[in-house]
Length: 460
Image 1: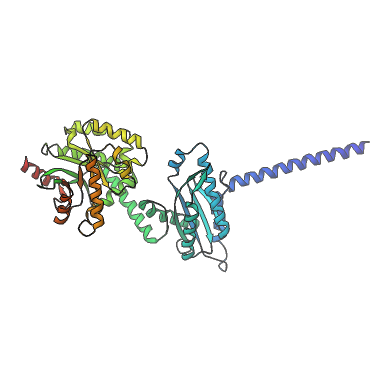
Image 2: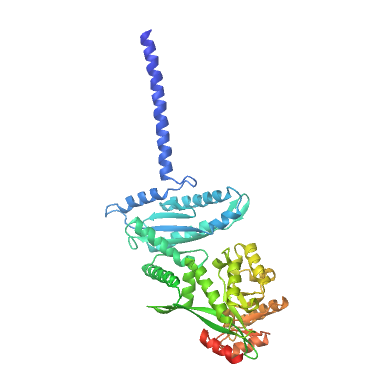
């Protein structure tokens, strides 16, 4: 009896130990999965991808020693997520991950989620031509519509690619290269892919240095490296100046005059356009307060400035401190400010217009929905983009487009400014279309404030 009892006890204890052992094994597997896999998508974690990639890069010299890294950026994911229903944003990421898994399995590679809206793919035995094919395949498959509860959704992706060993011999070097490869795509906008080039790295370093110099220039109390030039906006028939557009110039202590396009793009990308824009507004209004009463000053506003909560108060305070009449200020915006936060930006512009400040839509004709939105935008002026004006004399199609744009604006009683007028032929064509106000080298080149003040004094 005692032996039977002991045997039963042992069997019971053995079963319990086996159950405990199985439980530990399952927990260990679950823990390992959490450490090696992304919990939402099931793709590899960034740490696991790097571990496996290092093992691949560490293969003996006789083994395959070629391959590529791809960084996939899901553009505007935050904005898309905000417009989706609860849970759909995560479902969308899972759908993206499923497509990535299918592609990488086919290619013999591996994929990981390496950020909220970023994925990294590693594919061995791929040369430059193969990297181009893989990038195109990834872009094509990921850009196909996604089905979210019966509703199709188009997503935009950008892909940066780098080759081993040409561009880097370590995971860290390759990771940096694919990030640098994405920079031109972000600047250009829209979907696409780009292969790393060492010239991109040199350019990136130059831009980082220039950004640091811009930050330092903004910290100087007198802002002595910056200056405003002004380009006249004139009556097309008489040439009489009706106002001037303020244009920034940066005089770098070592590089000399930095291209205005480079300066503004750098300020926009870094967010420095907010303090720089505030300085431009104050300086322009201060100098314009000395101009003839009929002259207006045009000042450009960026999307980042429009996103600032204190914009209306800033403009109000500047007008008060400089004693510039609100009717003499025209704020120039582009249609891009209405892509996001449409209602908020419309409210801000209506508040400014209620104070007597003018609003002009700059670069009209370039926005993808300009014609659809024009009737509803809170604007007082429309500026036809210079790209249309430059081809007026040589391209009948451009003349037809400009004629249609003028007709549209005239039907809605919106005054038009033609930008970039450089020849008498362009001016005559524009006058025949009914254009009353122009801006460009033919009528006046950008000039320092002192020259504009001398011109203002002569007509006062």
